Length: 255
Image (cartoon, rainbow, N blue to C red; front, side, top):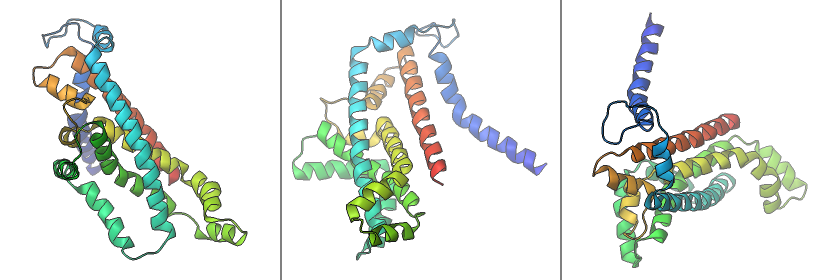
């Protein structure tokens, strides 16, 4: 009886979370522009989405920022995780704790703080400041993901390689990198998803001349929900679901 109640409770939670998204996906195929009543199945909103120039430009900008920030964050995060694992230095535990503080900080606090930081340095908000902001909030997720994998290493393997004459670079390239690769890919996928979907930090750190997709959708929704927005949201949800699923299986394989 208790097991049945737990299953029902869990099912209700998932229904509460995913029914709104399911409704959005269903209405992206609705053959009407203004009514919420079902008028038949159509794919024309996806076709019109592809022909919408401003939306496609915002989507291209989002992809550029997401790919660039995730690649840079993955490189820096991997090197940071290796440094935390391989070397013992003063303040190491404190620095690693700050990684979690950054992950747990509210987005609005991070957005305002980064904006003030860029203004202090004299940076003009735009693509560069947006890229730096996305690297900042993606970096901790890569560090934690890679460090969780590297913590399970058998240190004797590295000691043996060192005894056989391998340099630090050779150990990193031929031993650590192959073992870390699933975690590195998982960190990249998580960073890509976070960057692609971010609204709050992007709102504070981008300029008026560089528009990305989440902010474009936000500005369009304020004037009313259109079928094109439903279609675009369905595409973004499918893309996010795919990347998170791949990341989950990679992390599971690590374990």
